[in-house]
Length: 73
Image (tube, rainbow, N blue to C red):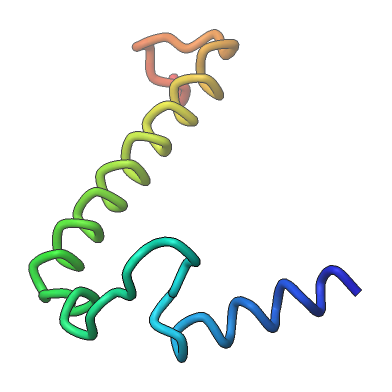
C-alpha cells in the first residue's frame, strides 16, 4: 500500500507544481533546463566511467606477476 501511495505522489506532484504546505508554489519557468546542463552531466559521467575502468584494470592486474620479457621466446 505504501508503494502505491509513493507512486501516486510521484506521478501527481508535477500536476500540483510540487506544492508543499506552508511554502509558495513553484513557477512553471523554474523547471526549464538548458542543453549545456546535460552536456556537463554527461561529461562528468564519462570521466567517472573512465576512472572506474582504470581503477578496475589496476586492481585486477595488481596480483599478476607481469614482466617486460616477451612470452614467445
